[in-house]
Image (cartoon, rainbow, N blue to C red; front, side, top):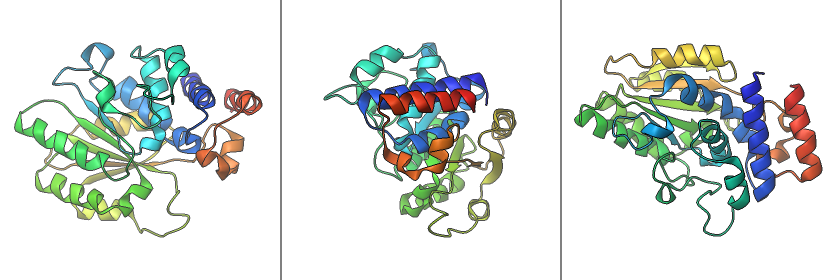
Amino acid sequence: MKMIAKKLRQDALYLSHKCQDGNLQSVFSCLDVMWVLYDKIMNWSPQKATDEDRDFFIISKGQATLALYPILIEKGMFNLEEIASEIGTFNSRYCIQTDLTKFNGGIENNAGSLGHGYPFATGIALANKIKKSPSRVYVLVGDGEFCEGTMWEASILASAKKLDNLCVIIDDNNSVGAMVDMGSMEEKLTSFGFDVFVVDGHNMEALAKVFQKVKIENGRPKAVIAKTIRGYGSKTMMAEDIWFHKAPNQEELDMLCKEVEEF
């Protein structure tokens, strides 16, 4: 695993420890996808964080917010110790689920209720099409969010309006497939008029190549199905589902950071 992937995971562990909250399995499954977007793909920087023509990243699976903060820290938007000192406290800007109202740039949406970020992203993409903006919209969703009807409504609209500036990224970590067979998401989204790409969600080089392909303007929205593993980067978290919603104490923090370092 690349050094940056380890550092981001260790920062997420630290923040979870400080606030004693977080969905770390979910965080670790999508961190590599998000880093590639911010580091290699998106037209975004702290200096462009409020530009009208910036690229947008919408985090629909809000339980992975602790993946977003370390990335924005690494990019110079936020400070680790500032977040650690107040995350999860009453009226803090730094919530466990993103809160757009408390920021001027960096955070693009309110998260929490599943199935809302994707329709929100679709609306942004449609508005940008109308304005003829070069901006692209990337939205990260969990595989379980497709149990919500709003996800399919957004898919219908994205295809009907030819939103080729929209890319929905599915963190397919088998959290739902282990319980309910939802069939082939690739076939479903293709039938809705999407260009669909399937990729190893922990292979940064493969992710970068796929995300270059989704920039093609051909009148079809894009979907990237990232095949991921819950808790990837920690042997303990990959093996123990209690880490879906558990924060580490100091001893566990030290153990997990060591596991990440040695992964």
